[in-house]
Length: 238
Image (tube, rainbow, N blue to C red; front, side):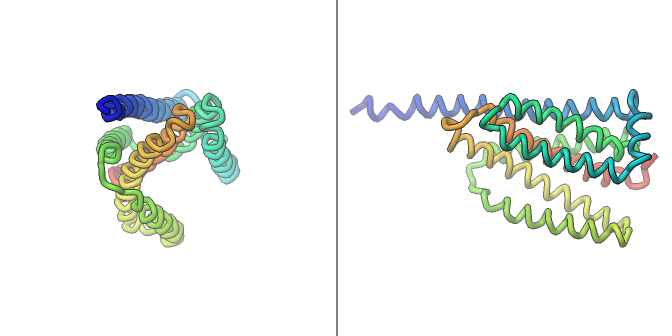
């Protein structure tokens, strides 16, 4: 009887050890992807600046279409291969980080180093705080994702409309809304991946699941960073 009662304890300990290992992998892969993008941005703005901006200047629409299609294809490839072929999924994540780094380098070229640094620090602080809350909270926040995605769709539609209105004030307000949405998504994704591991971690590759989670968190962080750029910039464009 005593042995039966004590059985859940080692199982619980093993689960917690496995969860820590999974979270370490996931945040490690996400941080590596951010680092790869940062290095790519630096190289695109320095060593390969002429080539990148020449290509964008000659065929801006084609450039954006190719990059958008390739990124969506890689996102799909990462998710499809996450549990089937974790190594391939990880490779696609790193390639995605490079491609995204080249694309956002075009935008970051408009801003000063001080603005970029400030936005990166702010994004890191907000993301880190929300990810910790999402990973450790005991509350059920699963329904939050539906509201956040609805708000994100509304923001995207309103941003498209503002392309025609060209209102700087509206763009500025939208930047704060974007930060709130992606701060919430950072918390929700962190919570969702923790719960997903606890539910399916013994049925699928934890490495593949970590890569899938790293992609989601990478996108949350990068979008936070880009919205903070707009907030911090003001009239501080080069």
